[in-house]
Image (cartoon, rainbow, N blue to C red):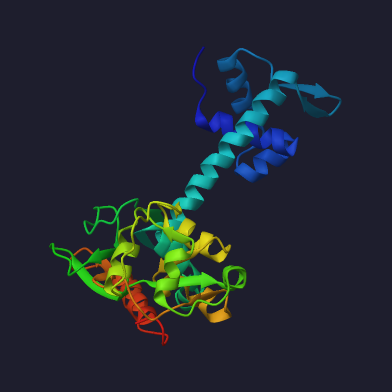
Length: 297
């Protein structure tokens, strides 16, 4: 079987869609006889009958209907790919990589403000599963937490503190009653992230012996940890910046102004000499981070 030409396939698709050789010629800016010639070439290449006369009009044969359906799908995919390329060319592309906790709890809730100010920017996100200060070549900005001061050759800006405070939901506090002293937490349901070290350090900083902290619930991801605290499952150590909404509306309460993870901060990393669109997003992020609440720093 001879491979049919693209022009013959396109001509037949238009004929099938409009149901007329003359109308197809007008759309394609060729004569009706040229349309007929293209269809005959296609039938010859495929060795099947695609059109048949019905009085003064034409209709598709069963094989013609099958081919027309497939061609319609194919040309729609081609048109979509071309439109996508055109849209990407017209929009400034920003590629952001960050921890899920930063994306869900802090950055995404603010993006409407950025989009309102810069509607022509296209922002794409991808998660990183572990804290890393190395920015991949295909990423413009990476946001993560770092203990101490970060090193390396990438551009960096500190966004805000990653210190954590003990918080609980009003639902949980109604269940356990008033908590008046730090030692009261030793008998409470403590929620942990990957391990119990932050709680252990917190108790020791208050001169308390935490004993065995292996009981309780452990959550590898901060989104799970914060959701558990909101649901009233216990008390968690959380960075205030990642639970701003819950603190503002009273869903979560800070129990004591005693901090853990005191050397941790959230940082923004980028490649040297970022292009103007990337620098614009960096400046916007830093501005958002500078809008502090009383409990956040």
